[in-house]
Amino acid sequence: MKLGPLGLVACAFLSILPERSVAQVGQADIDALLALHNQERCAVSPTAASMPAIGWDPLLAMVAQSYANGCVLMHNGDRSTQYQALGGMGYVGENIAWGSGSPSLAFLAQLWANEEASWTYAPIDTMNVLTTGHYTQMIWADTLFVGCGAANCAPYTFLVCDYAPGGNYIGETPYVEGTGRNEACPEPEQALGLAAALGALAALSAARAPGGRRLRA
Image 1 (cartoon, rainbow, N blue to C red):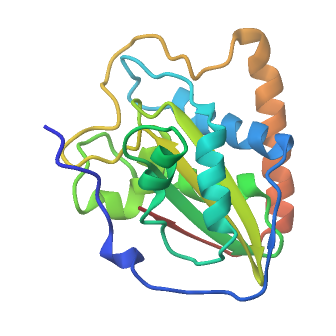
Image 2: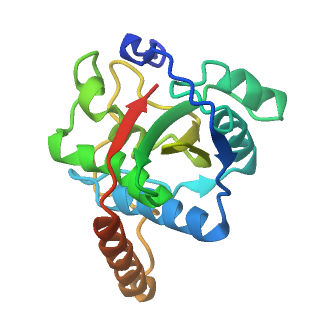
């Protein structure tokens, strides 16, 4: 039984940065963000009975970009309503992150993926979602689409990624354990190219080494 997605009280502070400008999410950013999400979905342990690849939704990206432009470093409580107004359906999940030092958007998203080191396969509860809720939204099997927006909110780069259908339902696991087809994994001939691209991205991000913060809905 779905009890509804968790909204964290810890996210309910307000920080508004007046100096702002739009940071365009270009095709290279989209490719890198999708590659990172699908890499995490491909590599889940234990393996999944079914794990679809996640795709890009321009409507989610519109909602995320519009919110990021405001440079309010907290979650968008109206994201589901805004998505539905554009023609989308259902609950929208959200991860946000920001960092100084001109980080790449994929670097900021990697902060969410890094939570995997603290995660164990178990139902979502009010405790584990505090430490690994970004990661579990990334690998939530029922989530099929993501769309992201970003803005330069001096001195930070602010990243917002919205997800549909949203995940992190209390009492549920991110996916069903099993040995089924994992559609998030690249075809064998693509795997080496993906690994090389992600390796280059990691090296670039390490060289920049910005500070970063992240929150989840």
